[in-house]
Image (cartoon, rainbow over all chains, first blue to last red; front, side, top):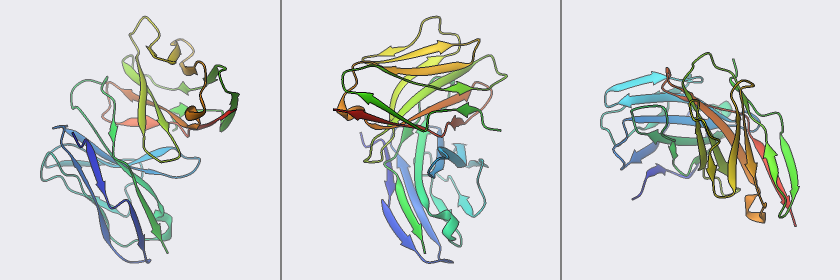
Length: 114
Length: 114
């Protein structure tokens, strides 16, 4: 099984450019989420989804957009990149029921905004 | 408000010795799960161990064990017989039964010395 697949792994953008980070999972997980990781701050939740057609904001949603048209895919869009969005981004998913299931992570995407 | 505290930004341990990584959490929910993840220098997030709030025994997974003290709201990770490959960032995380999302601590960087 591929698990959670993120693309691209590395990306360099100029300020003001837009891009989409792709995330796909093949585990039929209802819940999917996007985190950003910055030094000393752990992982902070950007957006999450509990099923197709349902999305919600996390702790740091500004400047990001998401959609969930299928169970498998959960893309993250940067509308107008800013240097403050330089970070490592992780997509993660889990089973929808209960609170015991762990998060399964993608390999991460390192984004640099110049 | 930050719900997960990891007070040790960095730790050193001698190879083959045991080490404890601290994690304290804050929640008013009676039902919750506590998770530890390892992030080696390659960047992926690896799930290590889970402890449920109602579990009577401390969780163990191979060389990893969780020292769970519910009254003190602490969930410390104990790694026995440290190996060089244990050098990594370690994140403590929590998910409340009443919530959809995980909250992560800032992490502890463990360095194992030969």
